[in-house]
Each structure stands twice: as structure tokens, then as C-alpha cells.
Amino acid sequence: MELSNNERRMLKSMLSKPEKIWHLDELLTACAWDDQAHVAGAGGSLANSGFITETEQRSKLWRLASEGSAAAENGLLEQRIWDWLSVQEKDSGMKDLQDSGVVGKKEAGAGVGLIKDLGIQLIAGKFVIPNVTEAITATLEIRERFISELSNSGGIGVPENDLDANLVDYFNRRKGIIVSSEDVVRTWQLTEKGRSVSDSELVEKLVIAEITPELLQGEEWRNADFKPYDVARDAPVLTAGKSHPMQALIERIRSIFLEMGFTEIEGDYVTTAGWNMDALFIPQDHPAREMQDTFYLDNPESVPLPSEYIRQWSEVHEHGGDTGSTGWGGEFSAEISQMGMLRTHTTVNTIRHLADNPSEPCRVFGIGRVFRKESIDRTHLPEFHQIEGIIMEPNASLPMLVTTLKEFYKKMGYPEVRVRPAYFPYTEPSMEVEVKWRGQWLELGGAGIFRPEVTEPLGLKWPVCAWGMGLERLAMLVLGLDDIRQLYISDLEWLSNQPML
Image (cartoon, rainbow, N blue to C red; front, side, top):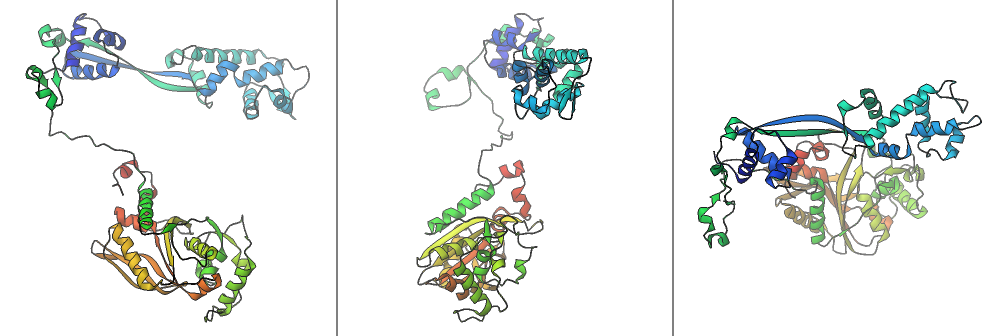
């Protein structure tokens, strides 16, 4: 068989002492190598070809971990406490130990447990030492010798067979004292086949792995060997770090809206029922208010709201206020309006933005988490993301809204978009947006014009086009998933195989 230069060099070095059993450091020196990978690679190939035998011996080594190193320097925790107790002239207790400076604040509890195991009791807050203490002293000396033995290994470790098994088991159960590693010792020896190789076969040659124009301009390549390649073998699949598909999709959506001239806004997770629902003309006895859909909070249980907003929402809900609506009737509750909760949609962000800027035209969007008390299944999660957007300006209209959404989905890669009538409590007219995917129409979000019951209490001057969609639903479409939970499972193989979005 054709040998590589590394294999030739290793064989030639071993033939200088054909009966010798070679160790790693000896081969590195003989071959003038500084990387053990050369020995491992050449040795493995020569062993597979029958020129040498390769033996491997594995052993478990124990060395000190961080707490063990501290114990080697300052003494074991139980030893320090025992040294302190041994010189006390009066009954000492837990408070005395904490005030002594012998142990840290976080060590006191653990230390008491350790000395209790030695036979020292803590009764009514006072330490009680047995009359005979030779066993305590002997146990601590054995433990100290064990720690010293590992400390003196220079960080390399001590083979498990050279240590007391009971002490290894004991300290291994104590956090941070010792840690193990596996030591592998390999040796190599020539076989009869290896010893029969002649020196003429072990002359190293120039091996060309890459043909370049500079190489062909000279003559050296004519007498060189060319590295063989098997074009039928599978090439390795290279994986590189990249964003999580959900984060990549968020960045893609963000860049599209920014490109279309929108400004991004954000908001808090914690809000009130007033901003989350009352401001959107959702009646206070609506099913969405029930506990099974909304996470109401104990802290804050209630958040004060400006009295002016509560008055305006109350008038709109009860009789329509000055909007021309008849409202929902019944009695509006300011207490319900001020209840603390986790937002159930990101529309609360846009409503707050409009309330703060009632006279300024705007085109804004937001991408954020929302929370609903949903049972987890293939299409539902209690925590998910929504994409929200609004346009408020003098000429805002339904055709403008439809055109905007079609342009967004076109940039996302879905040129076929249609809308159909729908109902939402806070928009009129309302519509659902559908895109065509694999020959089917899929609903991806809702949109419409905010009702006067929403806009007039906030003092808005112009119509407001609004839309919202679930990000996870869009992610399932983009990634071809049929289970929403796959987006949040730490499946590294699946994540590495996902396309760049």
C-alpha cells in the first residue's frame, strides 16, 4: 500500500529500535513532531494496515475541584471548625461560630452538618463535644492526607486505584471538592510486517494536495506525489452558528416594516384591563375577560389609571358617549378597568402610542410576546408573539390597509393575498387576511379600521388602519411545521438544519 509521509517517518523511527514498545512522548521526539495528532493519525493508519500494534490503557484520575483547592490551602471546613472548637474555654454556640470569622456566612450551615457527622452535637444552640475525641482527630487527619495527596499531584490527578475508595466516594458526594477525568495511555509496537519494511520504501516525498498556477510554473511537481481524492465519498456537512429561526424571522419582519417606512414601538408585558380591553371597546362581560383566557396578577393587583380615561371609557361602554354608538349598556366598573394583568395582545402598545400622540400622523409596528391561558397543544401556547401595526393619517383608508398588507406579504415571499369580511370588537370594517400556500388559502391575521368608540375617547384626529398576526403561525408556514412546539424545543440537529431566513 502507499504510505503517507507521516506514516513513513513513524515507521522509520520505530525501525531504529524494532523490538521497543513506544510511548507518545518518545515518538514525538523521534519523529520531531510537536503535535500528538500526527502520532495518533499515522499510528491509527499503520495499525489498520498491520504494520504496528496499538494498545490503549484507560484509567480514571481524580483531582481537586475549586472547593478542594481552597481546602488544600485553608483546610477543610470541618477541620477549621474543629480547630476553633478545640480551643474554646466556654460553651460555644452557632452565633459564636458565625462571629468568629472562622467560616463565611454561607459556610456555617454546611459546616454544622459536617461536624455533626463527626459526633459533635448542637443542642439548644450550643455545641456538645464528646468526651473521647480521638476518632474525630483520626478521621480529620485521614481526610487532610487525602486532600494533600491530590494537591501534590500538580493538577494532573491521582489514579483511582491508588486512592482509598471510601474517601473517593465520600468527597465525590460533597459539592466541588474533587472531580474526575479519564486518562488514556497508548503505546505502539512494530509487527513482523512492520519490521520487514525496507528503508528505501520510507523515503519521504513531496505530496501535492492542491494544484495552483504557481506550482505548474516550476518543475518540482513532475517528481512529486499527488494526494489521492475519493470523489465518491460523502463530504462532511459543515455547520455554522446562526440565529434561532424565530429570532431570524423577527429580524426579517422588522427589516421589511422599516424598509416600508414604519417605526418600531415597544411596551410593557404588564398592563391593565383598561388599556388591554376597555380602550378597545371590548365589553367588560366579554368571554375574553374570563380567567381561563387572561392572566390576572396578584402583584400588582391593581394599577391606577387617569380618571379622565376611565370616565370616557365608561361613557362609551355604557351609552356610546358622543360617538353615535349605543354602547354595550350595563354598568362600567372602574375597579375591573384597573386590574393588573399580562397583556393578551400587542394592540395595547399601539393604543398607548396613539393616546400619547393623538395629533401626530404615524406609521408604527411592534413585535412582542403576549400571554393567554391556553392549553399547550400542536397549535396553541400560553406565551407567543404577535406582530402589530397601525397607520394613522388624514387619508388612511381600507384600500391603503389592504395594499400595505399585500406589500408586506409579497416581501415575505407570498405574492397571492386576499381579504374577506370578519368581525372584531374594535374595528369596523374588519377583515381577515389570507395568503396562498401550497395551493391552499391560509388565514394569517386580522385587520380593519378602529371604531369611533376606540378613537374618539383618545382624541384622535384621523382614521386608524390596524392589523395583527401571530408570529408563530407565520413561522410554521415559513418553516413548513405542523406543530408549534417544535419552535421551542432545543433540538440541535433540527436547528442546525434550518435554512437562513
